[in-house]
Structure formats: C-alpha cells, structure tokens
Length: 386
Image (cartoon, rainbow, N blue to C red; front, top):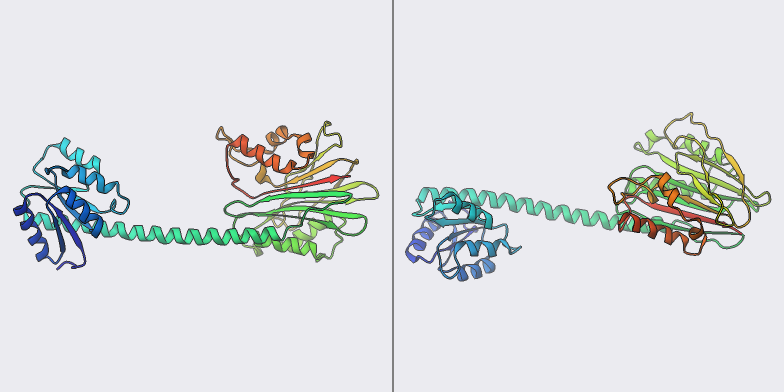
C-alpha cells in the first residue's frame, strides 16, 4: 500500500473517467483530489500542493497544456510531477507537451497497471527532487551562516587596523575585504622618536585560516614581540621567517613589505618578501615614480631564505603607496587578469597625492574593470611626508 499522506490531483472533465482513475489510485492508498476543469484544477493545486498531477489534455476552456504551463510557472508548484493524459500519439504532440513542462504521458484509455507504474515512478522522482531541494536549502543556510561569520570576522580584522595618522607623517589607508575574506593586514607606528615602521602583509588563502595568522603577526610586531630590533627591516623578515614555518600553519605562507623611515636622515630602509613593491611619488607629482622592492622569498617557504634591505632618501612632500596584489589582480573587461605593470602604467600620481586619492584609485579600478567588488582583499596604505 502507498503512503496515504501522498496527495495526487486528478484533473479530467470526463467524470466517468475521473471516477475510475481516482478509485484505482485510492485503492492503493493515495489521497486523491479530483477536479473537473482546468480552472478548478489550478485552484486545488495551489491550495493543496500535490506531489503528482494527472491531467487530461483535451479540456475546455483551459486544456492540459495551459494548465501545465501555468503550474510550471508557479515557483511553489514547478517541482510537482505532471502527467498528461492523452489519446494523441504523434511525436510532435509529445514534443509540444514536453516543451510546456510535462514530465510524462499516459495514453487514453489508461490501463490500470501502467497507471500505477507511472505514478510510482513519478513519485520516486518527485521525492528525489524534494530531497535535493531540502539539501539545497540546507546548503544555502550554511552558506548564509558562513557569509555572516566571514562578515563578522572582516569587521574584527578591520577593527585591528590602525587609524589615520596626522603630523609630520600623514598616513591613511583603505581596506576592502573580499567576500571570502583574505589575509591582508597592515600597520604603522613610531618605534622610537626617530624610527617609523610601515609594513603590509598578505597571508595565502582565504577565510579565517588566512585572517587569523595575519592578525597574530600584526600583534606580534605591534607588541615588539620579536627579539630583533624593528629598526632593521631585513632582520624583521629573517625573524618572521624563522618563527613562521609553513608546515606548522597548515601550508600557509605570507608575503610582506616592510619599511623603516628615519626622520633625522630622511632615509627609508625597506625590504620585501614576495610582496608587490611600494611606489614612491615625488613631491611635485610630475616626476617619475620609483618602485621600492627587494628580492626575497615569501615568509615560511624556506628556512634558509636570505633578505636584504635597500635605502632611498625621501624628499619633503613625497608620497609613498604600499599595496596588496588585490588592487591590480582583478579580471579586466577583455577577460584577462590585471597585472602590476599595467596597474603602474595607469596610476595617476597627481590624483593619488590628493585628499581622497585612495578612494579615487579604487573607483578607477572598478570603472576600468566593470566589477563592483574585488576577488581578493584590497589593502592600500599611503604615507605623505610633510
């Protein structure tokens, strides 16, 4: 016997035919509803949400095709298994029925065993679709929960980043986490009266597994937790590479750009480990930009990696831009992926030196690519030397 909770709707304007079919189905234990017109059938379907519908093709004023079309257009009934009852056997008729959404056909006069077999088959498919729909809803709930957790984590990461700085050094930044949340982070602070530390890092991967190591590294440097002096960028990177081993962090590694500005000598000492170079814009904004980067493997890859710093003089009025690769590794309108070389070629030094220059830079990237958001975290740090 069938499950009596399974509801079947039979739509047929032939009352005798409808009575015979409904009796056969009821004897099998199904809960059968009967409608004698297409209009009545639509009303019963919407009110009772049947698992399966048997509908005669030839009816007035709504025939079976129109009933099927309207039901399949209803999101709440689109998954209902729909069987057309017809005396038509031509291939083009079946094609027409399939085109409007019919799932199966029964040829009239309907033979009892075939009726029950088709009903059982249709119900199995309907139940399978219901399970898939339930799984899809569960998956969506989990996805929504994950996105909410990532949004909360992004808020926390943002709260750990430093506020804008005014004074002889004017520092502002932009942080735009991706939907998946990456491992970007940055910090800047005075080590002592003469040395100012600037650094930006990017932990590989996405999600909390990338964001949490990023925060821990920021806190380590901010708390002066390294034994080495923070005034020497190459020593900072060597210490980080010694203490942060990829095999101890689930295969994670990170890139970093680190710079120390000496106020008295106006010298900037910098060192990088697999990170995009910083960009130095001269005071007049019209001279050639300089890229400040050194060769060095990302932190955590090789224990014996060597890091060497370089230095340059900072003239009054110069501007320094430190960035993560998320600002330029974005899909371009032509289908290619953006790169550093093209990004630097399109960079507007004069615009970047102005108030609001970082926001304008992000807007220009969005306008060029046509993308509303970024596929990776974007971190931008601007230092203006008064």
